[in-house]
Image (cartoon, rainbow, N blue to C red; front, side):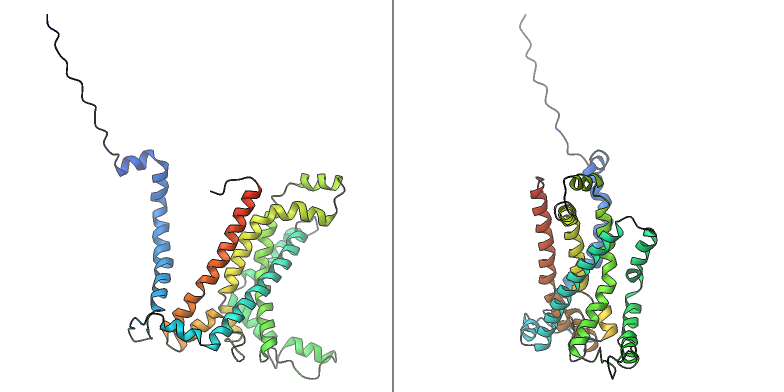
Length: 318
């Protein structure tokens, strides 16, 4: 009997899983769908305004008038604007000095509050007071403290016989810069101190005990235990501190309006003055857009610092 040839059975074609099936069985897809609302929020409230601001910087838009594309004319104008370059200098000086002092004072407070002391919880809560007070309220308080006629500092020094007349704190270019930097430090130190204190809480006490038994001094314990373990947190804290300080607006505007003689004008306050008060939206947007490279530089320095720290610990840079 002749063998009957049997045709090979066709392999079933694999169909592509639907989005719903992927959602049910793939955790990555599930995470993607959960991220969609946040992505929409960020795009609508952050990415779109940023893109619109950059576009406006290439136009001659004014308040009440639709602008036209003028390429880099706004930036060319700013390149020859001495007030703009003064605001750049003020911003860099303000950011560097305030951020450095906030870090130094905040680290000292964090180390102090990490020690065993009476009323430690109450002291930690009190440190946060400058940070939770509204910025404008703090600025108005400092405006009264440094007022040329009613300053409590001038009044005290006069009664002590140290000066004969009131100090014009906010009317002198040097004093005005010192005053706004002092006010920013007062507001920013709590953020740095509490964040670093949280990092110190993660350091195992056994490391300090072992170092003490080996005869390490307080400085050596800080140098070889505390500081290396706090490096990632310091990088993140200082990134946020630099970003907040560089873009500061409320404190400066409420205290000095950028005066005297533009001595305290930051790029943020100058942008507001040109765009909103003077009505030159395109020029104000160009000043704001000029801040982006500085902010990106601060972020990249922090990011590379974190990557270097991972490399030192033998971790992947992914």
